[in-house]
Image (cartoon, helix red, strand yellow):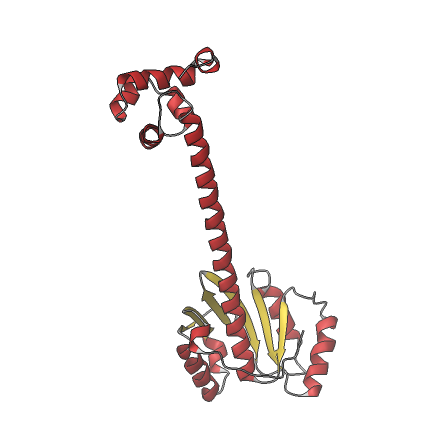
Length: 240
């Protein structure tokens, strides 16, 4: 629960395009000037804004990742139970959920800290983000949503990179196995891979199937079929 005393407006290039869903009821409780600030800020950062009847106050979708927020713009020291009860209900519905609270006065900060422990909140479940003013709070929401989306895209990129690496390794292993058959080169191995499939599939394929689906010669098709099926054939010494 860190209080940030600085407000910075990110440049247009900082954020990629995303979608911001705002709860209709939340909008009605805000001053029109603040709604105008939100609309302008989102537009400047390539976000599309939609007003919808949703449970949280905001849902951002960045890079295919959804992040939900409660945004408390008016902390009432005499009515905190409704806020924490809502938090408890919503945190069970969203995997990525944050609570942003504007606390401009010391009295409100003290009330929040006391209430946080009174209602048995667990740190990070969800994460509360206290801020000093409304504009700062909204900017922080956008930053959290954007960084979550960027992180997901990086994870996807890493996963694709690993998958490509594994694919190359499997293909290299396949080529090593198939080209170990006397007389079979990389072209033949690739033809078998495209037409027949894995080493196991090639081992099950008949000479006729290999001839019908590849450009291998009759001698090579017979050799492949015999080599992968007959241990005695591929285990005995060969003279090239």
